[in-house]
Amino acid sequence: MSGLFQSIGRNLLFKFDPEDAHGLSIKALKTGLVPACAPISDPALRVNVAGLDFPNPLGMAAGYDKNAEIPDALLKLGFGFAEVGTLTPLPQAGNPKPRIFRLVEDEAVINRLGFNNGGHDAAFKRLSERRGRGGIVGVNIGANKDSSDRIADYVAGIRKFHDLASYFTVNISSPNTPGLRDLQTRDSLKELLGKVLETRDDLAARSGVKRPVFLKIAPDLPDASLDDIAAEIALHPLDGLIISNTTLARSGLKNTGNAAQSGGLSGRPVFERSTIILAKMRQRVGVRFPIIGVGGIDSAAAAISKIRAGADLVQLYTSMIYQGPGLAGQIIKEISAIMRREAISNIAELRDRDVNDWASRSTPD
Image (tube, rainbow, N blue to C red; front, side, top):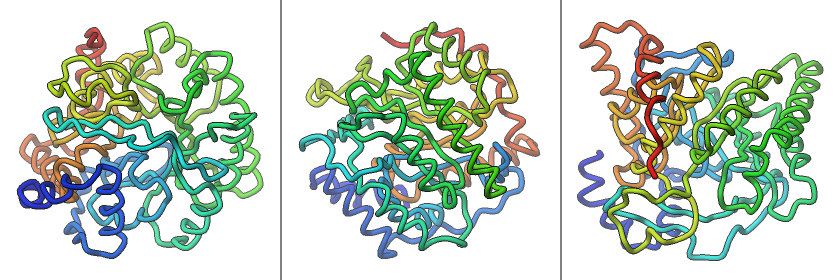
């Protein structure tokens, strides 16, 4: 499907504005126009992370299914898990359009969407309707741009979706909500994690079900900030990290037109930067702490590289824009073949093999 998409489907979709094309892809998945992936059941690909049994390590990152419209359709494409959102308590339109820009030569995207979504209530209704269907569906939570108490917005997300989310992602790393990344500073992070995890634990005590909470950080953090985050993680019962979100850096881009647009850059160019930060954090948090690696994954080789750099699980999004909806199934099939060829009994055996190499590198200027 990937080759057919690149020759026909991509050319058609790329005639549309990027945001309109995204909407069309959501509609196609919602209506069943996109065929499901043939099931790939390989015990060697199963991973247990934070108490959850993932059928394979590849997930759909947040940002694609912002309003929790198609998590089950995404799982049918071959993803081992899907993450919806980012969801804010109140609906918000996001930043002015245009706000998504393709960098075709780089297989990258710059976006400055600004957490556009329909809010908690609309997503809650949709996720309630899929209750009991199975599959791992995470909920990525954020804060409204004009909120007077952003930490309270994250707490509200935990409360709202506790009965429906397989796990939560606390997203404090988007560059498109002014001041949001300030929550990554140590004092703010201490308060945020304290209140979010206290709420999660209170709900767990009442329900008997404890939902994992992951923290999503930016790829633009200096070593001192990584030290601070690792220190706070050691003091709180956080379940894992997601590394990373989009970057503000623009190094090494071939595209000279849209590269100057403000917003976060995703896709192939962020692979190196995000993988270096991943490995640096793996060194800081130790071998037992779960990490999901995101940024620039567009092939089985790239996914395996992330795992070898310290990731337990990986996610993609931008590469599907360029390679089509068959990409997840293709990557999983190729990883399975590689493992059989190399006589690897479980994908977890690959983790951390290249951590020191990646961590020793300098992030691109």
